[in-house]
Amino acid sequence: MRGKDLIIAFSLASFTVALGLILYLEGLGPLPTGDLRFLAASILKNTFNPWEANLTTYSLNAVSAVIWDYRALDTILETAVLFAAVTGVTALFRGFFNVPSTNLQSFSVVVRASTRVVLPLIVLVGTSLAVHGHLSPGGGFQGGAVLAVAPALLITVFSLRIVYDLKLKTEFLLGIRFSALLLIILLTLTPPILASISGVKGYVLQNMRKADSPLSMPAWFLNTPLAGSIFFFNILEMVAVVAGLTLCILLITVEWGKIKNFLIGDENRE
Image 1 (cartoon, one colour):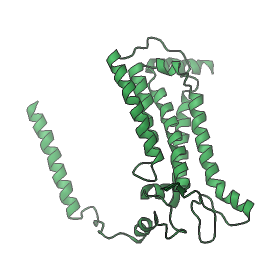
Image 2 (cartoon, one colour):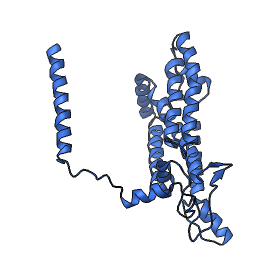
Image 3 (cartoon, helix red, strand yellow):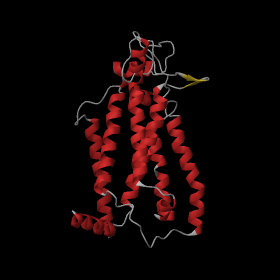
Image 4 (tube, one colour):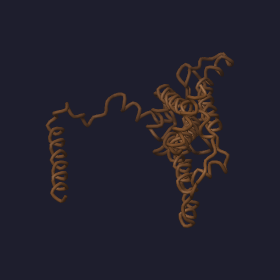
């Protein structure tokens, strides 16, 4: 057994050295230069640049600025793809999760007590990542993913009984996710709607004012940059992600035997 472990370790070390040598010799292609490309330099310069009001996003986080301002349409389509995937999983197991479950067991008192201490911290960190996503590394998706750890931990420690006690239904989670996506679309269309009412130019997904459009989302909250629609997109994305991931967690925690019996019964009914 020891000889086998040595062979595996030597193989991994050899692979690492060989890959590093190939990269150094540009065997997989030329290495990127240390100079920034024009597009990258422009984004870094104008992400937070109050002196260029027509170009800036008022976001201190350049990644959030790119995701929800400079290429926001791609992000919305990616969110829609995740929603479609969650909807497909729900359709596959339609009505199943509401079937009562038995023999549900939880962990010991010590584990349950420590979980009650950790859960508020998870919620705090996840919410902070989304709320401050335009100020520091983070964002709506990251915050939603962290928040989804909370229901996963609850189910693991307290069993699925906690889901029934909270009356958490798949329809409720889908409704939350659909509402968040609907608000994202509404926020996307708000500038052109206001523009048509005001008689000025406005663009879909417009955040701050442009050279030919005076419309702008709120740039500041008191003395803190708000980054306009980036802040609201992060919040809505957090809600959509945590609802979708929680729904998937609920479905994958059900026993396979019960899923199989349910699907067989569903086929017989058809």
